[in-house]
Length: 319
Ligand code: NAD
Ligand code: UDP
Image (cartoon, rainbow, N blue to C red; front, side, top):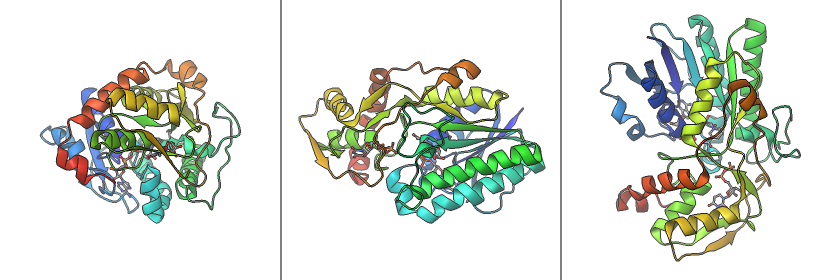
């Protein structure tokens, strides 16, 4: 049985990856310090003999007994309000955390895949974003703690690849959504759906003309799985290129939820990227991957998930 370590395994994406690797017959070790994650996301796996959970901060030395075939480094605060609240931990997990994972991988002779992000392109001057674009990041702006940690993480990973010959993979993830997102993580989808369910107006930042392209979580997981098993070491964008303005997105959520509330405009956060859409030519060519779930389908499933939360959670996690 192949053994995989997933850091950030109790988070939104990490927990879906745990499910996928369990389904594929792996022994899965999830490691998480629960700073933004939740054990509820993986409690259904606890009873399985091929699942283990380690409560550990990966910015500190990592010890895992036994063999490891793969390490997926997903630990990191991921939403703007999270990484603005814990900026130093964000920088540490992207630097010390990946250094620990790479060191562990050398000892175990394991392949490492890191979760990078479309944020490495910053507020992009090239549209759509190809992997060759070097980005437009403000290192000293509020988002710099996340963007630069991820850029450093990519550089460190490539250095281990070229200097130590370690097998590495880099996925640049574009905005992904689905069940298990935290209602109060500040990202636009849980924010809008939570507001609609509580009967509040939807808080659109700026005039809503900024764009994003939203990928359903199952599509992302499939792309990551294929990339891990491929032999391609350079970064690959995984995302859904179906681009939409945030204003149109808000209108879609209003229609989906049937709320009688409206969109209200709040100030646009500093350095909020104006346009974002992945160029997925590489993923298509190298991995034979493209997204399958339309936004209409994915939003419906996600809305059902948020509707199933208790009224208490809905209000406790209001802001
Ligand atoms: P999340 O906050 O739900 O998950 C992150 C997990 O990492 C949490 O469970 C958290 O407790 C854990 N963690 C954070 N610091 C840790 C540390 N020092 N030690 C151990 N565990 C730690 O966020 P997510 O959306 O699931 O994001 C997962 C990864 O994917 C992140 O690396 C993020 O940067 C990347 N990513 C996500 C998206 C997206 O749209 N969701 C987009 C681009 C990149
Ligand atoms: N956004 C918004 N209202 C909210 C939360 C976010 O209008 O309540 C906007 C935000 O300014 C950004 C877009 O939605 O332009 C996506 O934000 P999110 O935090 O989800 O992701 P990111 O900016 O990291 O892509």
